[in-house]
Image 1 (cartoon, helix red, strand yellow):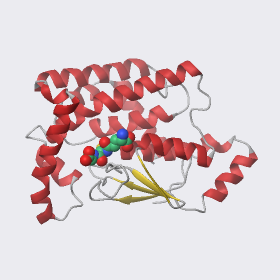
Image 2 (cartoon, protein in one colour):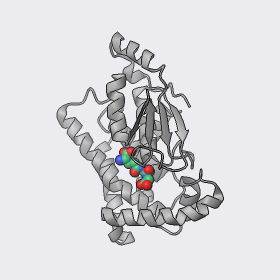
Image 3 (cartoon, protein in one colour):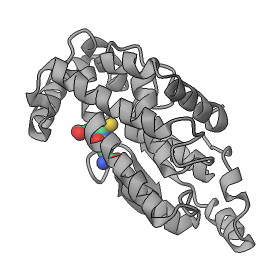
Length: 259
Ligand SMILES: N[C@@H](CCC(=O)N[C@@H](CS)C(=O)NCC(=O)O)C(=O)O
């Protein structure tokens, strides 16, 4: 799926960078990601983050769905192939793309704005993410839908065998991370606090760092859309949907970059 939207951010960079991008566009960027579903291009928050980033930065790419994360260099999705290189982890991928394509959506941020954006990213990726994992994989009512969508590209018979093994692995990850040792109510309270912090920080701005979209908006969009726009039950989702600025924010990014 070649993406050509979102070029505006790079429209004003120097002619040299334009030329660089035209040339590098010739070598195809392949993005391996978690399958789409529930109306989203990817039901993986980090895969959707990378796709949002590529659209914000205006970098053309081709998305490929991987049924499992095992082929990637870090054993996780997303990962990319570009000019003979394989790179895993959305954060490292973005660093690579910024250097290779010479286009940084955060270029206009000051050092303290970058520090704030990084703290917000850690909140979203290192804490809120695990509440999403808990709701998808551990809440009994949600499990059948998670199994059939997140693992939906695995042939049904194989999935029957793999799904319970994968679920046990995720339970161990949740316990090792620490969140999995809390009660359901405590986990939801933790997630709701993060949602409140994002909504309060966004306040009435267009994007998290101001009037233009930056990397943190890709991070937030990938996670929030995967919480707010999926047909799973969660008090965290319910809380987020009650916050009009978050609902408008997600719609704004979708309209601007995914229409
Ligand atoms: N830090 C990584 C996290 C990626 C990640 O956790 N991906 C999940 C899907 S959302 C995954 O592939 N999980 C498979 C596993 O943990 O075995 C990034 O930013 O890309």
